[in-house]
Image 1 (cartoon, rainbow, N blue to C red):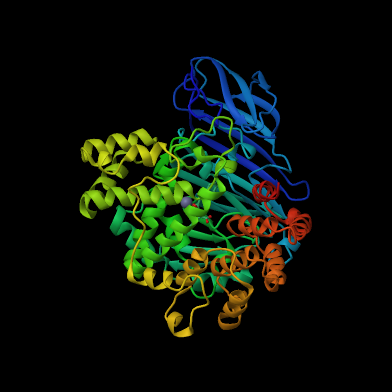
Image 2 (tube, rainbow, N blue to C red):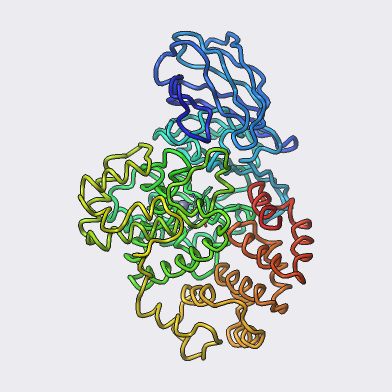
Length: 583
Ligand code: BES
Ligand code: ZN
């Protein structure tokens, strides 16, 4: 017997879940799901223990398929893994059933009061299971190496809609309650299990795509994401047919802690993407790209997370290149390069987390999370592409996707495939330095392009308006991220006076500016910083803003006051992240 994954109790000698049937009643006043799950095994059990992952679940009963009670033990919680639920499975059993309740503090769930929604009239519930939070919603083998299909039924207040990352089957209203049924016919890793319940409406964007949002935001969302079908076509031209039938979008409440989450058939998106100018749709391209890299070909454990995210950033920038041209893709790569350098500085004390292949036994994947697997992974793939040539490298990627469809992959799987398909390529780029050494290899080449050079020429000062008249938001973000810190108050003053950065609508641009200004001790932006920290729960914005405030003695108390004030509005994962930044 052996564990399959450092973040799961799943054991390779035990029965494997092939599918599950889940039923839950959503109890808003109590903030719990009252639920029952039947796990169906890939093969009849040999008889013996089955270890499942759980976190803060209240287990009421465990039964065999015909309702007979089974013995079980819920072991004390490990701080990272949660509690092992050990079940005595009889020989030949094909399924087991568990009745349980979630905790109001379930790490995957955020229960929002009406005041925390746009219209302030109805409560809202959503899940975020990646990396290891599915176990707080249902007892399961919570490792991406065990794919599972499922059916689900949600009993919700009839005034609300339930949506899931699955195919909707039916909605039946019984008085005050409604039951909504779903089915997921493609096997998924548990971290892609996802649901939301709220006052939701939808609008079609194309025959295979619609956007869901609170009614008041629906038109803005439909406008922002109107071009989704173009993204789908560009992605299919690059990576082959889209395998998940629908690509729907759900605009989340502001406390959603990520920019996007690639839940299959229903990508979750932060409302901070609604800039009014479609300037943040690269996040849609990113989540769409996960339909191939991540959802079809999935990291076997969080230690190989770069296989999900590095490949997806690579794919995202290829989609962007197809839609907006190579200069835009190069600008995004240059921003990625700046963020990667910043991450190396932040990880100076823990350089082992800047390897692509990590060792995470005993380490919470949320704590290990950074841009390193994204951007270093991207630059590794670009280095391979540069030596192999685009055509050969595209062929290699096609092989990779084809060889591991609906599979779970490790770093060695990728290295072996590259060596087989293109002998000598790994040695030419010094792959071991990319994969297993911290930082960037000596042979790393910075992204380069004409527009990018024009931006970098302006670094260190407030550029004249004719130098910037053709700049897109992306150029501005690069400019701000590349600025050496601190910048003098005079330059901050002039930048803001000339370009009204504090009033920017694009949240990426706004936050890049606010962070630069805070790190430079420019107090003029503090009222806007306060507003932003009260309006968004996206960690990409919260972490650098709180960090910038906390680095100066004058603004550290402000950071603490604002965190105390807004903490309860943030998602549990974001609370933990900000706490970490302030500690
Ligand atoms: N899968 C991630 C979000 C995630 C990662 C959730 C790890 C939980 C644990 C998603 O695809 C993502 O990377 N989102 C980015 C988008 C960006 C890179 C374009 C984000 O949230 O900012
Ligand atoms: Zn991603």
